[in-house]
Length: 255
Ligand SMILES: NC(=O)c1ccc[n+]([C@@H]2O[C@H](COP(=O)([O-])OP(=O)(O)OC[C@H]3O[C@@H](n4cnc5c(N)ncnc54)[C@H](O)[C@@H]3O)[C@@H](O)[C@H]2O)c1
Image 1 (tube, rainbow, N blue to C red):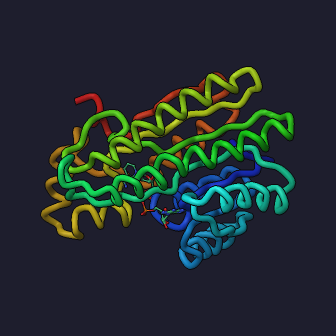
Image 2 (cartoon, protein in one colour):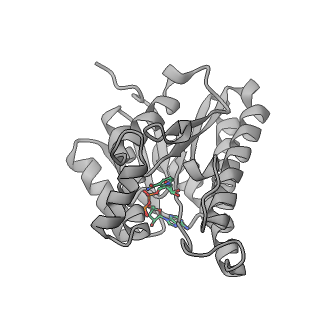
Image 3 (cartoon, rainbow, N blue to C red):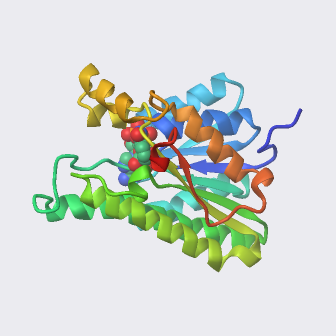
């Protein structure tokens, strides 16, 4: 049976770890050929090896989404590798300073959050949509926002601002290019077990326990549970879905 992304060329940023890595494996399972990108070449290369070991086709291209010229080159290199681009998961992100409040947050922390988590997504969309238009074919984009893109989080002001902004960028691009059959959606993950979350809880079992207690489903999410939603949003099965900020959070946003 053909996979949901059979024949498509995918691009994933932040593909070297956590949600990006698991989504890369799912893209390959569903038949996409893909570019795995990350600022970290070691972990990105490892993801490509995992994809290839599972029988998929992928290449690694290094890119720092905080640099416009690198993002432009990433999209060009994707087209050079596979001839086109059909779906992109703009997922690279950082947690920044997770202790700073509105008054203790530094200019540096605020700027870094905006550069990577917000402008990084805009830069990716800019060059991906240009490529879709050049091809004259439909395209699908999924941006990674967060539960923190929908609600406030104490000690997360810059991250929260960036992730709220991702939803605004998503809705705007969705409306701008709907007539060209370019769909743009966002996923809003809750607490997902990844290296990022491990850094946030300081690796402590007590920290994990506290997080689990806050979850309606009584457990944390798995990166593949975000990946499955991303695959669906990128597939033709979601052909009438655009401009959506989809919570994938075990019910947290419903609380
Ligand atoms: N884990 C969670 O609970 C959670 C919840 C909500 C949203 N998110 C978001 O999901 C995305 C993935 O997070 P994760 O938990 O898998 O984190 P992670 O730290 O495991 O992975 C993030 C990846 O992004 C890469 N990256 C960081 N800065 C980059 C840059 N400037 N350019 C390119 N790549 C860069 C890192 O090298 C890493 O491989 C992030 O956008 C994050 O904000 C995570």
